[in-house]
Image (cartoon, rainbow, N blue to C red; front, side, top):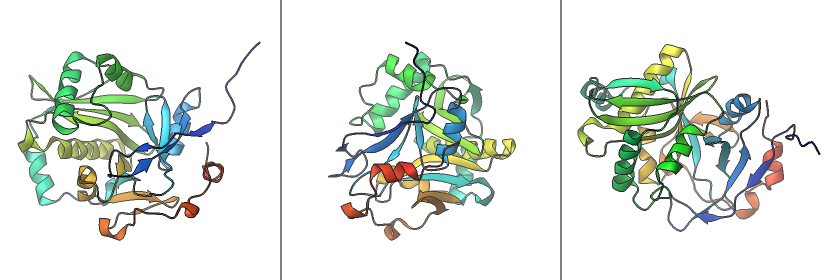
Length: 264
């Protein structure tokens, strides 16, 4: 019997599990597989609707009683560096950037482990081994690149980046936790803004921003940031302006959420 993939992507929802960003919260995600000849078009279309990629899956939050997580992106034309960000660019200007195909190496994994042990020792990736790391990096059905930053000798930062039709999507980044003076997390974002400008791409997608989460606060420090909320992109406001609680009856059923997704 011959089997074929469904013409339209099928959407599913995960079981509730503890939220990694806010205490005493439960998260669930709406997701679909990223596969087939239309993977690039699907990734482009859903990224504009708040979805993120993880390997061959696209997902976005679909929590029953919380609306904290919002996809964030920088409007490159509206971005203006602060004095602090300008100093970061100058301090790390000596770093060499190399954009490569998504291929995992032991040097990357060693840096990744140092980063996790320092920043996310109790996170969901804490036990990731080399094989799982390689899968995270290499299992991509779309156009992706690894941005490596080094001082000519040692690897200092890495970012797995997707090339969308309207921007660069920073899938996952990690860096040397001992090089605090360089503010490498900020520098990598600033460099992606610079690359997007050169390529004529209007946005840099940062992943999710969670008001009230110290881990995510740095994303709101960039001018020109927009968040995807209630079905559209809007300029980010002060975190105190957002309520993270929603009444259970105000959350649309999954079928209605899926019906409003625009497919390519």
